Every structure is written in C-alpha cells, then in structure tokens.
Length: 286
Picture 1 (tube, rainbow, N blue to C red):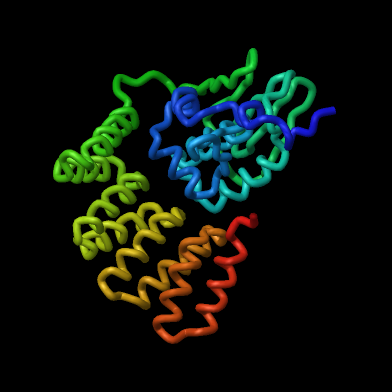
Picture 2 (cartoon, rainbow, N blue to C red):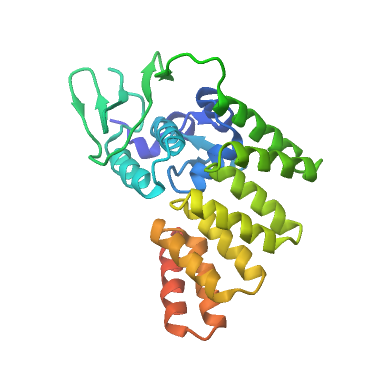
C-alpha cells in the first residue's frame, strides 16, 4: 500500500494554476485572492509554482461562487473548512457532485449524499469528476438578453491589464465597475492598492470606507483599509480596522504582525505581545 504523503506532487496535486484558471474560468487575481483569504492552501512545485489537488479545485470553485452570491466570508470559511475535511484528496472513481438544495449544501456520491455544513448557504454549481479530470457544470439561470456580470468581469480583466501601462485608465475602469457593482470587493482592493502606491492614501481610505459599507465581511478590505489608515497617521482607526479584519479571519498572520507593531509603537505592550504571539503561532514549522 502506497502512502499518499510520499506520492509525487504531480500525482497528489496534478493541476497547475494555468489549468485551474482554464477549468474554472477564473482570473489569476481571483485565484490569488481566494488563496490569500485562506479558502485553499495549495502546494508549491518547482520554481515555487502553485500546484492544486482535486480538493483544492473543488474548494476554489465553491469559494468563488459563494462570494459571487454575496455569502459572508466568515460563513464560507466555516463551511469550506468542514468540507475540506470530508473531501477526498483525489477525484473519486464513483464521481462526486456538490449542489445546492434550497439553503443547504449537498454532496452527492454514487450511493450516498451528505451535508458538509448546515449554514444558510447557496451554491449555484455542480462538480463532477469524469475520466480523470474535473468538470464543472453550471446551473444556468433563465436566458437574458445581456449579462451584466459578464461585462463587469471583462472590464475587471481590462482594468488589471491596464494597471502598469495606463494607471489612469485602470482607475477609471475600476470606478466604472464599482458604479455598476458596488459590492465588487476585488475592484476596491485593486484600486485602493493603486491609490496607496501613488501616494494617495487619503483617497484610498475613502474608497475602502465605501468598500466596508458594501462588503463588511471581507477581511482583506478591512486589512487594506488599516494599512492606508496607518499611512495617513490615523493609528487608533488603523488598529480598529486590523481588529475587525481579525474578527473575520483570526488566522490572518499579516494582520496580527501589523497590529502588534502598531500596538508596540503606541505603548500598548500587552496587546502587542498578544498579537506577536498569535503571529508566531501561525508561522509554518520547518
């Protein structure tokens, strides 16, 4: 019997980032953000390139669709952590389907079906491995003449592509996205980062304030807002933003580190020690 831990990475984690993007129709940015938020933890292959397992692919698709459905990040993380424990590391021979039935998530296998979580979540997809690959089957809504979400996705990709060559056009595109879809978290994150990089941290804070209003459960928005608040010297507000980020995602190591440094600088030693300790606990052990 072969120990799966000793199997080659290409066997246990057969999917590259390029393959995952093609299979799921996600941008590189979307995959990166889902990894940053802790929905998946892929392995690193040669050249530090990400390698994904079957379980990673299922969780990525689940996280993406749930975020698109405006499900709070905290609820998604709880459900996917439970789902991660029950999903097989590789595609099962008898097939697997994950579907939404009302407000329940149902995992169906050939001879059984079960719920990984009982939270009020909605998923609008199915997944079924076939002939050694993973196929996602969208449950399409009724046909419409136009797809605003598709237009926003295209505009977002265009904005990302313009960031280095034409930042002004990229900013305009991100603001158009937010005018059409005020809860587009990734647009807030990208545009806010651009503003901070350009020395416009005050504008970034105003933008993130809007982001918090529309995406209150996104820890990255609270984190980036805290960084921007630090840049303009609003220390107490920055600490409050870091704490809110950590309430939503307690294992956000960078937020613990930044909060610890800021507490130390402001003379709050006990809080600094608490966050430094949390940061150290979250570091990978060699």
